[in-house]
Image 1 (tube, rainbow, N blue to C red):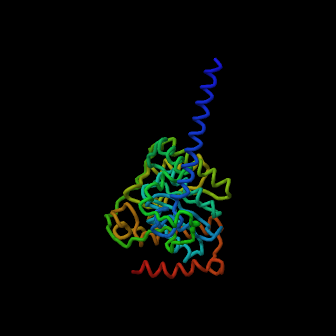
Image 2: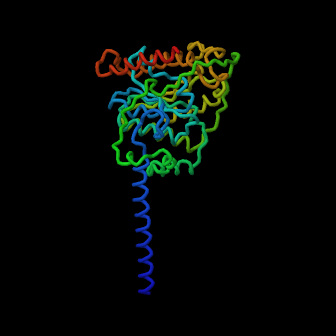
Image 3: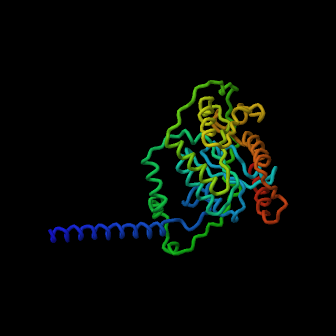
Length: 321
């Protein structure tokens, strides 16, 4: 019995040593492989996502999170031009909610936004528990996210101090002047039917809302105009979710006449995403909405935000090309 106990203890000890060593290796390799710069085009993340890391501490009023509907429709620079509000779009193509949650936490590492807008199209995107588990592991050990970086790594960069000072003049917005319109159609026909929402997605929205409350911010759900992706069944599902979570919900698809969206000229892909003219209309509305409903300050004459005025000049030149 004593011999067997010793064998068991020895196996346990070897197992503990093995996993401890594995964790050390993962931590060290994660440090080595994590990019040391956030400059546009780095593999840290795509350039339109990483500029938030370079913004001055506690200078962002609002963060916009979501999929390509968000980065096509909301121009922080236009909201700055018209309202003096500082905002940033943290969105990616086909973004799933666990990525949205990642961006939310990353935003609060250096910023204290008063408002977080979650574009609602991402709430319907399917994800599995395996996806969310893999995401948690990648968050703990970034080697799993950046393992392909060995192709571009140089020895001199391994011990270099991280420099995340690069900023994006577009503040995450992706401008498109392309026009590929579609005939006007009534895609928001009233119905009392509701599009089902997966439980895991519902829980992520609840978790994000609670995180915002704990950090002094308010989560707002916003549905961007999209005649291809949106309908009244989805509206009903998000409206019910917003009531359950006691959070604001704005469906811009219900006020397209007020926004003067013209689907013949304001979309780049037949009603899926907005182009620059459509984004101008949505950004004008959203800037006014944020200023009026959340009492956000106008920073345009504040010297501490002079970089935003400089970025605006470069932005206006770029969108006029």
